[in-house]
Amino acid sequence: MKLSRRQIIKAGSVAGAAAVLPASVLAGSGSALSAVQAVQEPLDPLTIPKYVHQLPLPRVLAPAVIRDSTGRVIRHEYDMSQNVIRTQVLPPGFPRTTMWAFGGRCRIPGSSSTEFVASSPGPIFENTRGIPARVQWTDRISRPHIFAVDPVLMWANPTAMEKPEAPFLPFPPGYDRAQFPVPVVTHTHGLVVKPQFDGTAEEWFTQFGHRGASFVSNVYEMPNEQPGTQLFYHDHAIGITRLNVKAGLIG
Image 1 (tube, rainbow, N blue to C red):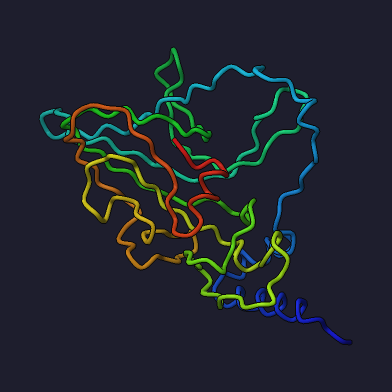
Image 2: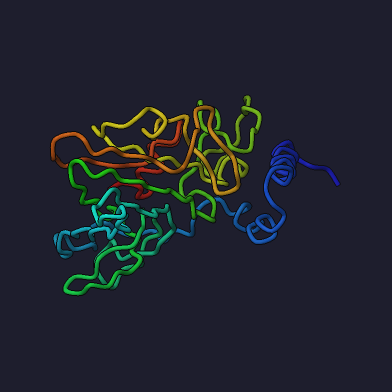
């Protein structure tokens, strides 16, 4: 059987991914790797009514409160993750949208209980000046990227695939091996932290142990010593920041 150049490259890409991804992951995601893009339903924008949804108000995170032996609060701890969700972005009656979303334990309004909430924009951190925060980030994006990743650019490249050369594959869909796993790292604009906890572009990581060149830890120590203000947090993985933010990783 004669194979085209595209078929050979595609076969090599999937085989190369098998060398660095756990067998259990590949067994469950083979069909997803071959279908890089999410199933999309073309819509006529003129049929979508405007100003139907209320402006969404993100929920407030409920940290674990750590106290010393005297009962004084010494730290707030958050367990945060990047997740895949299906949510009603368009008005009711239209299809739901697949998005990436920040998630964590949030307060239930009017209750002392909490629940896990993943949303875009992500939940709100309500910090107090002088009380440090510790945030653990976990990548739970278990499917290929919903947008085509361009491996010709300088990017995280967790599977260490070779940079494509001309003639290039049609883009999108592009290259299967660049779609999964999805590298992530979270940066907060204006937050005063040590550089290893700043979420800079080369501090990315994946759930399978891939790490960026500047990665130190996925647990961030935040002193909260600056004056009170409103800050913006978002994904910052090198070469795919625009894709991860567009997919929903903002808060």
